[in-house]
View 1 (cartoon, rainbow, N blue to C red):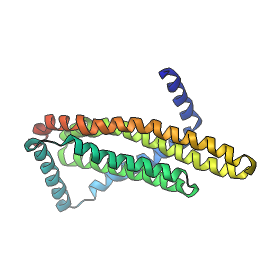
View 2 (cartoon, rainbow, N blue to C red):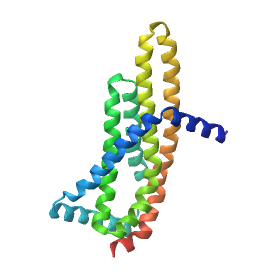
View 3 (cartoon, rainbow, N blue to C red):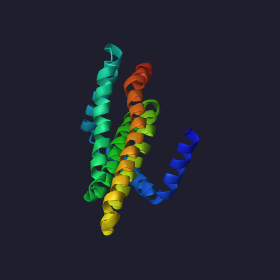
View 4 (spheres, one colour):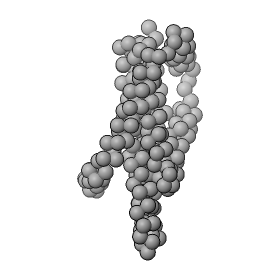
Length: 213
């Protein structure tokens, strides 16, 4: 069963390699833009962000983390992205906005990791690898895959309208497949959400004394 799903995913990526490459390139562009934006911050802005980050670490040292609340916040943030990508996929005009969302996600990731490295040096690299990278390696591929799914469905709508006698049947089949793929990748995103809510805080608590010193 797992090998069959794996083969289907490999085939899917090969058949949509150009779209995957385009979205990945948009993400990398956003990632680079976010990292370079850190260099444009003023000294006051950097000090404020550093102070905020230090307060964040102290929060983990002095208070008990509410994992359930973190879970709710993470679900609201990430499932909102899934919902927006799904909605954009069912509208023909949503394709450019899918690229925009992927680029913004890359910018946020690049800015966060770039700031940590700029402010903390090797400690920032360590913090990024242990806390940001594990969840991003789950979220980012899934979000890109959902973006490809949305773009393909929008294009299927256009193709179906060009053959009106096949429009209803073709669109119904494509829509069911579209929803199934969205649900499939959402399951992986849920796994990343649980990782962010229950595992990442433990890791931060462990390494915070090293980062703070």
